[in-house]
Amino acid sequence: MSRRVRVLVADDHEAHRRLLDDLFSALGCAVTTVPDGEAAVSAGPRFDIICLDRHMPGMGGEAAARQLRGTAYLVACTSHPEGLEPVFDAVLSKPFCCCELADIVEAAMTASRAVARRPRAHPRNDSTPCAAALPVAKVACSR
Image (cartoon, rainbow, N blue to C red; front, side, top):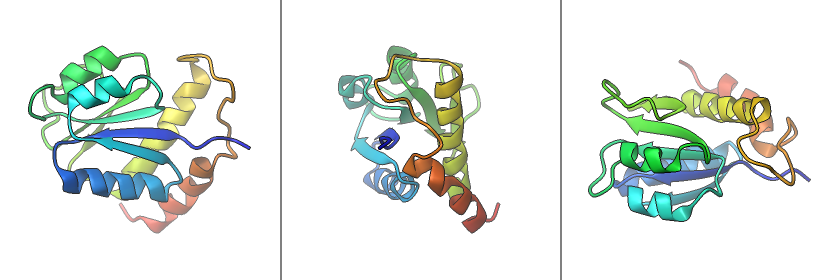
């Protein structure tokens, strides 16, 4: 059996963490949330996707991304994407549509298959629950 895509969400606003948790979970992903960049860095490289709010007290998303680079597919989650450092693999601009999350998961899965970021005992494939949910999510959402 294939494992689920593991997502870490770091955001200082609880409502944003809950929303991203709910949406990624609806795509079949296993989600962990933390309130800041320090906690994201401490969580370590055990995630496939790390979604970082750009502006958090203490260590912001860009600083955390510099430390996490190469460990996961890094996504900046921000309402101000202009001038963003090029340490992220993708940008999720607030407000966003649920289809954009499906696109992020699909891009992360494609990137991990195309370039081995780190060795995996059980590589992902198109039968993962997250991959199976993508076509449904794309049809259910209107852009």
